[in-house]
Image 1 (cartoon, helix red, strand yellow):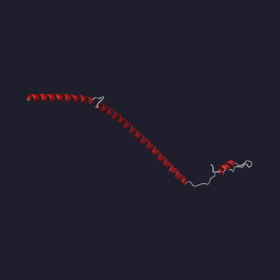
Image 2 (cartoon, one colour):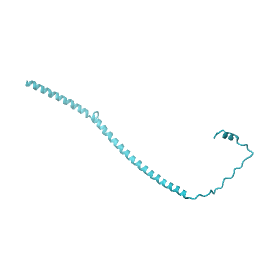
Image 3 (tube, one colour):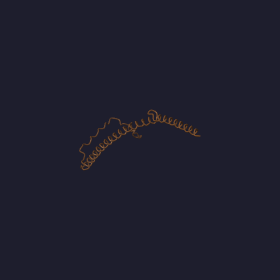
Amino acid sequence: MTLIADALLIAGALGATLYCIVLARKLNKLNDLEKGVGGAVAVMSAQVDDMTKTLKQAEAEAKRSAADLEAATGRAEAAVTRLELLLASLHDLPEQPSTQPSPAPVPVNETAPPPTAFVRHRERGGA
């Protein structure tokens, strides 16, 4: 009976050894830096680094754009203030009559026929 128990114990130990060898090979393949999870982790790490750099560049550009926009807004507000001041000063000026002479009347050529085509066109409602 002990001989059978010893044989079963040795068979179980050999089976566990083979199982451990198979698992070790699968684990090595899984951790392979080119094809397995290790490779995927390495690729993802490189992508995270690239995204971090891109994010920092985008953040710097956004800060520059915000500063430019703030400067443009400040210039626009200053221009609005000046325009409001100029408009207010125009309301304070007294109204003066026009000192420019009126245009001279245009002489009419009585020998020329009236422009009938234009008159007919206007009578029909044309522009």
